[in-house]
Length: 375
Image (cartoon, rainbow, N blue to C red; front, side, top):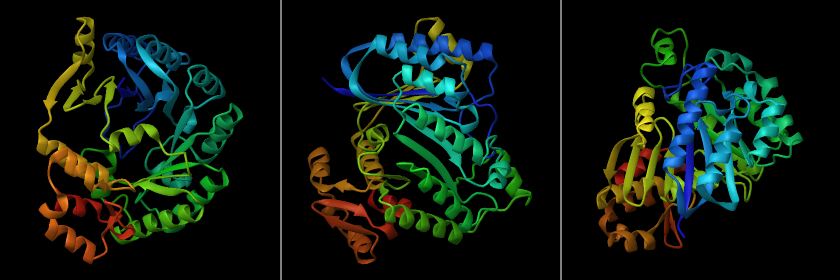
C-alpha cells in the first residue's frame, strides 16, 4: 500500500498581509459555506481506497478564519473517503487573533494534532507595518489555549528581513518562543513580491528593508541560538527539537506523493504534477459538473525529476544521497559535476559525508547559487 499526503487549501483571510501574493480573499460567511461544500465535493471525487494517508495539512490563507464547525466537516469528509493512518500527522495553520478555545476543542475533535501559528514577529510595531491583525499578546494567549487543550506539537512561523526590523527584534522574538517552549520554528526570509502593498511602500520609500548583510546576520543568529537550545535545522528554513520535525513538509523535500485539494492546490503523484484552478468560477464550475478542478497536468521528464531532486534534497540537513541519485538517474553526480563539486568543497559551501552531499552552514546562506551549479 502506497503512502499519500494530503494538502487542503483554504483561500480566506480576515485581512491581506502587505507582503502576501498568495491566492486568498476576505470571504463572507456565505462564500465560505459555498467553498466548504465544493471542497467536500472535491474530496469525494478523489476517494481513494488503495493508498494510506500519512499526513494531512490544512493551510491557506487562514484556516482558523473559517466558521466554527468547518474544519470538523473537512476532517469527516477526509476520513470518509480516504484510508488514514492511525498515527497520521494532522496539521493546521492558524493566526493568533482567530484561534479561540472553541476552535481548539473543534480541532481536537477533528483529530488535528499539530498547530502552526503565524506569528512573523514578536514586535507589535513591525506586525502593524506589514498589516498583521494580531499582536504579541494574542500569540501568547493562543499558545496557552493550545497547550490547555493538550496540543504539544506546535510550530511558529517567523520572518526576517521585515521593514525596520533590527537584530534586537529577532533576538526578542526568539527569546519569547524559547520561553514558551515551542518545539518547531520556521524562519523565512521576506521575499518582496511585485504587485503587493509592501512592494509599493518600499518603492515609494515609505518603508525601508534591512540590508542583505543585516538579514544574513539575523539568519545566522537564529541558527546559532536555536542550535544552542537543541532546536536543530533540518531544512534551510525549518528547525525542530528531536522527533518534532514536520512529516508533511518532509514529504515534499523527499519527493513523495502528495495530493492537493482546494483552490490553486498542487499535487505530485509519481511522475505527474497537477495544478488546480486558481479562480473560484472555474473551480466551482468543474465541481458542479462532477469533474476534478484540474487546470493543468504536467508529465515530468527525467531531467525535471533530476533537477527537482537536487533542488529539494539540498534544502535538507541530509542533502543529496549520492547512491540514491545514481540508482534513480543512472548517473554519477560526482563525475558529471566534478568541477562544480570540487569548487564548492574547496570553498566550504558543501561537504560529503557517508555518500551524502549536503550544504554547510556557509552553504545554506547561498543555497540558490549551489543549486544552480549542480543542476
